[in-house]
Image (tube, rainbow, N blue to C red; front, side, top):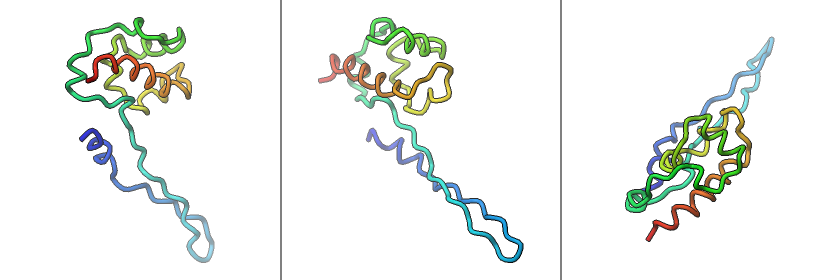
Length: 115
């Protein structure tokens, strides 16, 4: 059931743009598939209910990542559990490796509460 939200996002792709031509129609451009957003970490509702309100400072994030998260309104672990892998891509201070770092740290933290 955790993957249902991913399948809801599939809504066809974007068609290509036709090329220029003075005589016959040009070749169409390449289309694009929809971009899927996935939760950084999928956990069960049972595990989610066990997780206490925990400030981000209690996790092992480096100062730059912590600042970027706080600058974008995140204060607790619970907020990060709603985060998708594409949510912060355009945020000021975002670095490419951040989604994997967040996922690993959230997994480490949440595994304490999983059965």
